[in-house]
Amino acid sequence: FIAVFAGMVIALHGALLSLMAWPRLFRPVLALCLLSAAAAAHFMGAYGTVMDPTMMVNVLQTDLKETRDLLSLRLLASLLLLGVLPALWLWRRPVAPQSWAKRLWLNLAGFMGGLALMVGLAMSSYADLASTMRNHPSLRYMMNPLAPFWSLGVVAVESGKARSEEH
Image 1 (cartoon, rainbow, N blue to C red):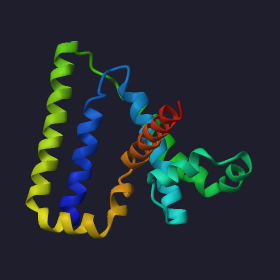
Image 2: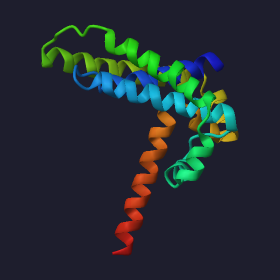
Image 3: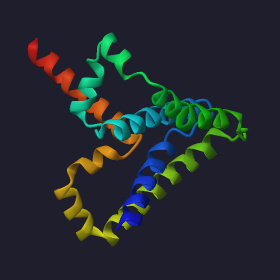
């Protein structure tokens, strides 16, 4: 089950990232993912938290004093080793020129392939997956770097709804 779940997470991330695999977009997006994943991994490991929408609200409402209290050498090491160094390696890789039509086809094929793999893996272990997700809903917020972005999106949508209801 653990291998199936890991495969599903990898396939989902691959599918979503394949949509952004455009020459000028992919490196910045992947660098942002690496840095956010490094930060999330640090805080999940150091404080035993998950990146759910409630935690994202806490992150967004953190003031300067709280931010200073969270800064540490361990955070710096996590950001450097898990975020900055891989991002630098990524930026040094050459990008082969391709026509936009070929790139579009490859991006869509990567997306569809990733989704198909994820669905296939889910179906192969559906009973275990359904039970685990029902009994441990916090697992979905441990998928790094997707969970912080998902939670940020949820907070943004809910905030927008709240603002529109006020007017």
